[in-house]
Length: 201
Ligand SMILES: Cc1cc2nc3c(=O)[nH]c(=O)nc-3n(C[C@H](O)[C@H](O)[C@H](O)COP(=O)(O)O)c2cc1C
Image 1: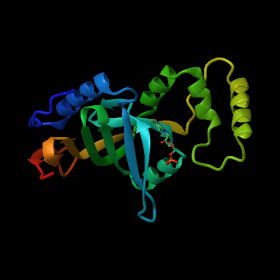
Image 2 (image 1 turned 90 degrees about the vertical axis):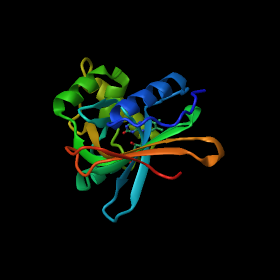
Image 3 (image 1 turned 45 degrees about the vertical axis):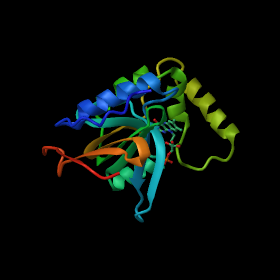
Image 4 (image 1 turned 180 degrees about the vertical axis):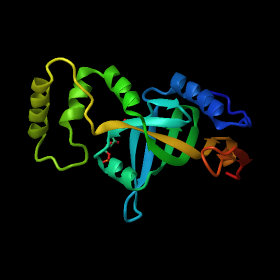
């Protein structure tokens, strides 16, 4: 168990995130990189699902998906998102709100090339978030894509990544008697300096 000393104040939230992520990676039984991703529909209805954070680089949190999926369509219309990590074993939560940009084609190609062949074929076979008549139809599409790409599998044009550039990052940790500790970093724009505050739990 990680000792819950009060959260240290860093001038920049990324080193604190890295430190907490290392603690989570050492203690979570599976997927310390799993994060809830909330997007906004055209009618203002929020939508949330879990995705895997694949990198924290160039100032943002990167995940990969089908850009024609429901989340992809929502992000095309409203490129804003919220993320939430919850690491149960160390009783910590990190909340992020920010602006979303696509990763470059070169970044997506590099990451796609590291995926197992089955996942690469699956990216072609799955029309994520669209109606599927039966499980057999999906399996049939997988067989077709395996035959179409017998050797190297290129990255599908609709499969890529997004980077969430934070404007807000909140670090929350469980403390005795529900007197939890919350440290909030905010900035008005991605290029602006961070301000840091503590909020009541
Ligand atoms: C642990 C976990 C990890 C997941 N990782 C991803 C991911 O990295 N990318 C992705 O597109 N979907 C991932 N999913 C599936 C999504 O939660 C979701 O079902 C899918 O992306 C379709 O969402 P949408 O219809 O809102 O676009 C993951 C699900 C779980 C439970």
